[in-house]
Length: 570
Ligand code: PEP
Ligand code: MG
Image 1 (tube, rainbow, N blue to C red):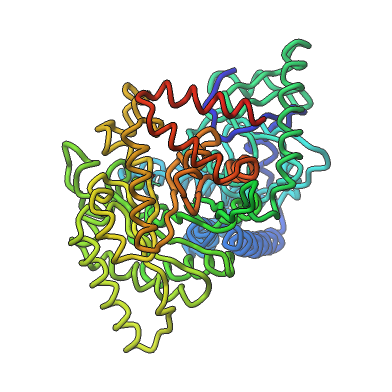
Image 2 (image 1 turned 45 degrees about the horizontal axis):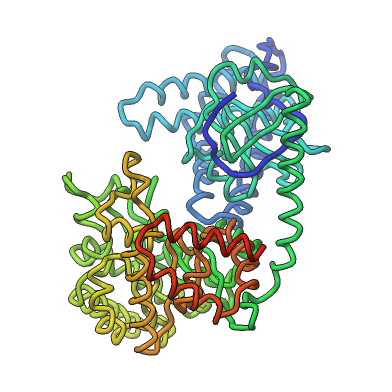
C-alpha cells in the first residue's frame, strides 16, 4: 500500500492494531445511584491526575505549546455544566457511569462538530479523547498500546496526542496510519522521535491488517507491505541491515568533536523548530543549534504567544544546550508561512513581499516582545540572536535600534540579560552578499540560508514543484556567492555558518569546507554522516577541490566532479 512518507527509515515487524474504542460500553440499569456517582467522581479525579502527569511529561519533552492540549483536556473535566449533565444522567436515568459518560460526551461532541468555526469543530476530537479516557478508567480496560511487551509496528486510523504521549518509544518500530498528512500530529511526532512512519494510506488499511501480521514499513518511499513475499522481505532485510550497519558505524562520531582529517575544528550543529527537535539534535551528536526557527511557536494557534511564554521556551532551549551555542532566529513569517491572527495582505508574490524582518520592523509591537524574550533567555545559556532575510543595511540598523531599546527597557525593569550576546544575520538574499563587507562590520556572525539564497539568486520559487529541478545549490552562481560571503565574513573577523539544506548535503561538503565555512547546521538526521565525511577530508584537499569546482560551468560538471572524488574517498 502506498501512503505519505512522513518519517524516514525502514522497519520490519509484527503489526499491532489500535482498536477503535467504541466497543466495550454496555448500558446497564443500576440501583445504587450514590455508588455510581462516587465512581464517576473518582474516575474524573483519576483522569485529571493522569492528564496533569502527561502535561508535565510533554512539556518537559516537547514544550509548553505541545503540552497545552492536555491542560485543555483537563479543563473539559472542570466544566460544571458537563459534570452536572453526567450526574443528572445517572440520577434520572439510573444508568451505569460509563454509559452516562458515553452518551453525554457523544452529545457534546456532536454539538462541537456542528459548529461554524473550524477551530471549535476541531475541538470535537478533544471531547472524544477525554470521554474515551474516562470510559477506559471506569471499565478498567487496558489500552493495548500502553504496556507494550515486544517490539511492534502500530497500525491505526490516526493517533491522538494522548496516544503518542503514552507510547514506550523503545518498543515502537514504526507507525502506519490511514489518515493524516506530512504535517499531522503523528507525522511530526514520528520525525521527532526518529521512528519511521507512513501516513495517509487511506483505502482499507484497517481491514487488510490484523494483529501479528508481518509488516514492512518503508518511511523513505511511503510504502507499506502486509505479509510480503519472500523476495520483498529479503530485499528489505538487506536494506535494513545496511541501514543498521551504517548507524552503528556512525554512532562512533556521536561524542566526537567534529574535525577534519588534519585536525581542523569545524562546528556541526542542528536545526530545530521546537524543544523536542533540540533533544533530537543532541541525541545525534549535534554541537549546537545553528538555527532555532521560532515561527513554529507562533503557528497553529489562535493568538500570538506573549513575551513570557516565548521566554519560557527560549530559556528551556538555552538550558538544554548549556554551553553549546543556540542561535535563535527571529520571526520569519510570510512567504509560505502565515499566521491566522496577524493581518497579512493577499500578495501576488509572497516570497518577495511582506515577509520576515520586513513585517517585524513594520510591527514593532510583535517584534519587540520577541527581542525582549530572547534577551531575557540569554542569561541561561550560550544564546545568539539572528535576523532573517536582511537585504538592506537599513533593516539591520532598524532591528538593532529596537534591540537596543529592548535592552534599555529590560535594564530599567531590573531584568537581567547577557549584554555580550552575539547578534548575526542570515545571508539569504543576493543583495546581502553584495554588501557583505559592510554588513559584516555590524554583526558578530553570518549564517547562509541556501534555501532562500538559491530561490532569490536563480529566481526559482522554492515551493513550485514544476521547477524544483532548478532549485539547486550546485549552481555556479550560488557557489560563488557562498564563497564571497565567507570571504567577506573572514575579512571582518567574524565566523560564517550555513543553516540551509545544503549544509547537510554530504556530496557538497568538501566544497563548503574548501571555501572555509566555520559552522554547518542541518536536520538532526544528517549530523553523524556529515561528521564522518568531514573526518575524511584535509583542508588542503578540500580547498584545492573547491577552487577547481569554481572553474566549472554547469551543475552537471560540478556534480560529476564531486561524485568522482566521493567515490575515490570511500
Ligand atoms: C534558508 O532559507 O536557507 C533557511 C535556513 O531558512 P528557512 O528555510 O526557514 O527559510
Ligand atoms: Mg530562509
